[in-house]
Image 1 (tube, one colour):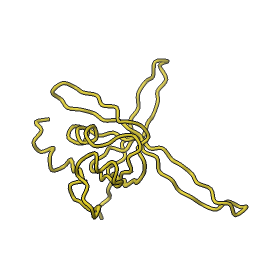
Image 2 (cartoon, helix red, strand yellow):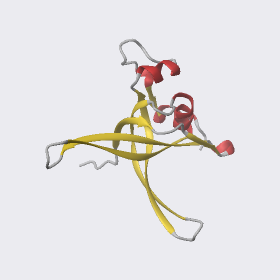
Image 3 (cartoon, one colour):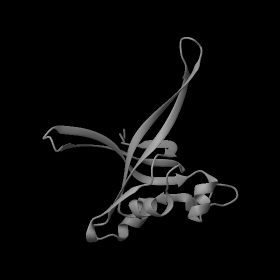
Image 4 (cartoon, one colour):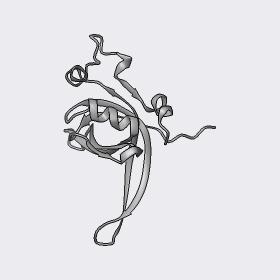
Length: 140
């Protein structure tokens, strides 16, 4: 039995990606994604709940995020959960869970048009960004 760490999310990007460069080591992209779920409460009223997810992308994925993704874009991402900890400026240990993006697909026509990769049927495979195929060319 294969056990995998796999995440798929569909939502809207909350802010323009923050890009950090590490010299020859590559790039890191940070952004947030809002997903929505709805349910009926005890009173029978429809309640919409938004969840924010922290996303990161490295190297080739970060380059593609920087080039194609902007605030408000409607995207589907695939990746894996990554847990890490750090010590803040007050010397308090903090824990964070992020989704490391491996692939993404631009779902809205407006964002895809600005990326120059949208086709009229909306199913262009050019919209899918796969890190695994391109990362083989990186020496790190």
